[in-house]
Image (cartoon, rainbow, N blue to C red; front, side, top):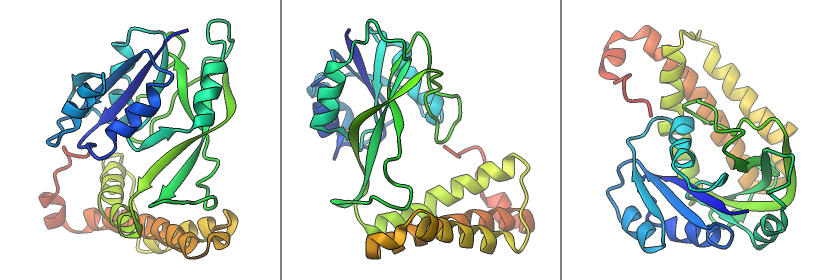
Length: 261
C-alpha cells in the first residue's frame, strides 16, 4: 500500500532535508505545505523530490489537513519538520499490511530532545502520537493549536520517532516565555476565560510540581529541572498575560488579536 508523506513548514531550511530523507524510505510521494518561508525551505524541499503547496497558515489542524486533501495515496504519514523516523520506525511501517488493516491510525512513541539529549521524563516519553493514518477514515482535528489525528481505531506501534524540539536550553525557555505563552493568553482571552491575581502563581506552581515530581523530572538531573521550570514559566506567564489583558487597556489595545497563529 503506497503512502503519501506530508510536512507543514515555515522557515525550516535547517531540518527539512533530513526530515524528508527519513520519510522517503517509506513514502512514494512527498508533500510540503509551506506557509510563507523566507529561507531556502521550499527550494530544498523541491530538490528532495517533494511537491510544495503554498498555503498561508490556518492554524495547526486546518494546516495539517491541507496536504492529505491533495495527496495521491490513501495512507498519510504526517510528521513535523523537526521530527525523524528511526530505523525501527521505518522497518515497522514497511512490515504493516495497510491494505487489510482494521486500524485507521498508527501511533509512534516520540523521543523529545534538547540539543542531542533525549529527555525520558517530565511526560516527554513515550509521548505517543498518531502519525500514520487513513485519510478516508480520519483526519486532524480542526483545533488551531496542538491538533491531533482523530482516529477511532488506532494502534500503538513498538517504534519511535525522534523530535528535535529545542536546539538548547535557551530556546526551551525563550519559546516558553515568548510565543507559546503569548499565543495561549490571547486564545484564552478571546474565549472569555479570565484570571485572578492568584492564577499565575497557582498554575505555575502546579506545572512545576507535575513535571518535576509526578512525571519524575528529578530523575533527569539539570535537564529535568529545566523542563519543569520552563513549564512553570509558560504556565505562569500565560495567566499573567491574560490578567494583564483584563486589567490594562493600553496593553490590550497594542496587541493584535487577529494575529495569533
